[in-house]
Image (cartoon, rainbow, N blue to C red; front, side, top):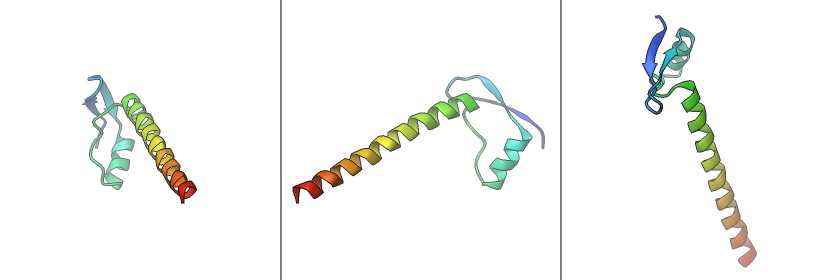
Length: 69
């Protein structure tokens, strides 16, 4: 196993997929990453923010239903 050069599907820049990362991905049965570390962080931050908004929305809906009852 050796370091691989991959191309990010978002920013189209090349990045190194290091052996250490490859082992971790293999151990978790994940596919090779499609995004560079920077784009992965941005995507994760966006996704996490979206999930937090949904959780708050659901919480607010439940609270309003309880108040109406």
